[in-house]
Length: 175
Image (cartoon, rainbow, N blue to C red):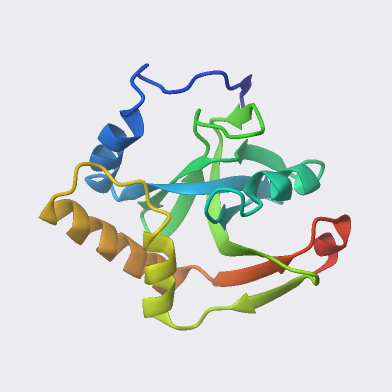
């Protein structure tokens, strides 16, 4: 796997490249998420949340336990019967990015708290609703919406999604 110091604001040198690529990804069973990703023991973990939710903080805490993919924009793509996460060039606070990918094991929706705990979300509509707010959107078309909602529905069926209430310390590693 190749690690690079990510100093690019965009891949195509256009600030809107994620908008353009989001459209292409939808045609290929994927989407961009405003999220962070790491590979732990060969499994991809996706941390989802708005700006300042703790995505970069989470990777800083876990950096010695796995491979950081990216802390701001990740690609999720369905391949055969599994979902993969892919690192991108579009980093936030942590200027380390990786072009590696891994099978997606879980999606954790970040919530800052005074205790560490995971709460599985069972309601498929709630999962789709939560994830839809973190999808990077292209210029919207009916077919993009259809493909993206279908992808999110499959994610909700096949990948465990949790609310991750967390503190900013290493005690979260033991949950």
